[in-house]
Image (cartoon, rainbow, N blue to C red; front, top):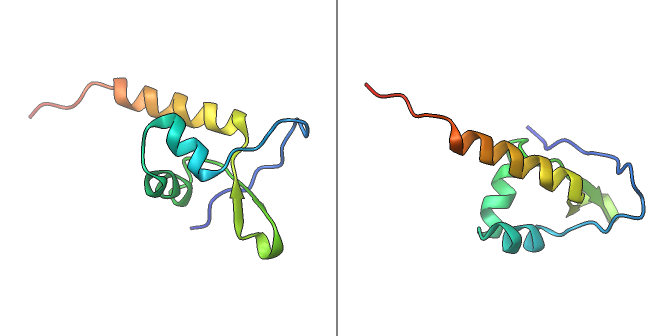
Length: 78
């Protein structure tokens, strides 16, 4: 399933690359790409054929909130 494409509300906001998001979250680029593929992180596709991926700062914040919320959920004990 392709990742959602989001149109930026604030055109003056600087878009982030996959590498920048990975460095900020202290994860690998592959982890970020998995989140995009899973639809957890919304992206903007740019360039010829839409091959380049950029992340709006607001989408990154929303993704981090979702991840933090899931990490705080209590695990089920059997």
